[in-house]
Length: 446
Image (cartoon, rainbow, N blue to C red; front, side):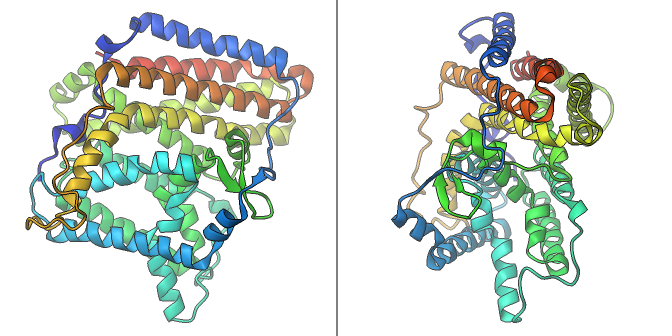
């Protein structure tokens, strides 16, 4: 099965579609961050965000009753199983051509579509995850507690398994040879199913929280949703910044956000003419070059982040315990930046290829059926114009960095002595500016 051009081209905007020149854009974005930092230092002198995410305004009772109802939760699980069954039909019995919806369903509807859904509704993948449901049903049939496995999962494991599986997925999406073909997708998904279900048997349902890349991805972005849970479990409307400020440090959290951000930066780099020429002319297999490039970009993002947070701890004169905690405490500020890059990179892909994939899913076996009533859909391009996409890309990238700067500032007021809090943020400001400049240059390279 050959990949469609749309699936491999993640955006339709380019430098020629920018409202200003690229140098002007980079300078304006950097100055915006600097001005924002100065304004925060002058006007935002006390922590204002709910670090414990304990508050919020309760939702209407009917909505809370609906969301908390057992029937509603099982309906979501059933929807997840039906979607998985439709996907498996296309994967195992569909045509081995570009008309098979498998690649679009995995890379577009699932991976890209999870971002806006989670941003609006919270960690939706946890509610519909078909593997979580399969494990739950198996545990109920065996009359076992699904939360208990054969052994305890050490607390120190944290999100490290999710960081590893997330890297495995972005490698599949961005590097793997023939990544849109059925055999490659089948092999990766088989490994994914084995790792997740075997881990759930061994450690219980908490393994999905720790190891499922899609749950980790959805949970991180879902912290920015206006709908969330208060400390007592009540469904509330909340300030999205309070939600993300409540993301608590845990082992592996920094690795997850760095992999997410670094992979989107590599995606931009991999489409730059200079990188494409290097990949074609260096004599190495493209998978080797791509794997090295992906790893190096993620490593560069990690080194910059750890260097900046380490410098911030020293300048801010945090005590020894806080110095070790600073990278994890600041990690939540990277989430809106990563979300901005995801939207910038994949907006046009989701709109165009998403419509095409939904149309193809109506006939997963390629028999001329129209199960979903969408087989005759033609992609509507009204929402995708080069200038419109370029403007959106600029907006979400700069907005993501502005929110990251605000979140880092508020957390610094918790971590550092008040007299050193602003000075301690200077390395973090430099980091935000560096990420912004690099991101814009990579996105519009060539």
